[in-house]
Length: 328
Image (cartoon, rainbow, N blue to C red):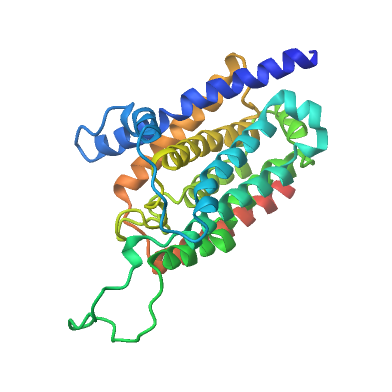
């Protein structure tokens, strides 16, 4: 395949991915509503219409440290997620060789997580402003008491998710690499073309369960919605995003869900996203992942530290067992 054709295939895969990802938020909200026995929004509302609506909204200066940097973070996030998708494409795997490896994939996912930490740290919304007069109601903070911005709580929570919350997810990603004997994505795909999908093995089944739990943590989805938990007011650090920045953030989050399905399809089924009929497999994986996350969100309560730590420890132990079995 010549370079012009390869570039055409990559562009085609990106066009398909961009179209599909905007429908995933609608599928998620619709599935969650069905579980809760209500109609829910239209499939196009949370993804397609929301993005278009925010693009035409008036933009205002956000209340944040370094407002321009704060507004640029969703664009950087979208670029990082696009880079993750790029190294999963077969043409890029062949052209880049060792650079399209599991290490690059994990590194980019970590960068994407750190960007959310920056969003939390920079935002200083109206929710955190001091009252113009001393709050003297019973139980309120006394005059002169140290006050922190509301978003700092989200920043601390985000740091927990980055440092150890998503650990089982990353351990699960290395199970296919151990079975294939290589961290190159192309070698992992070739191994599964010969020996069958990793998901059909015991380590693959365990890894699939851990992957799903860990991806909920990476997405900051219920019951691990620490950063923008429902118990908080509105969306915390994301509340200051408006107009085009908000639209780009919506696109980046939707694209991340789709890319999550592509990562699973590549590592556990041996079918990377490509500009061909086979791209239906990653698309189905992303839809199943979205619906499973919606059902979990509908049934599960928001975890506190009391539930969060045991869940992370248990899934980490299970993923380590899967790694040991994969070695055997």
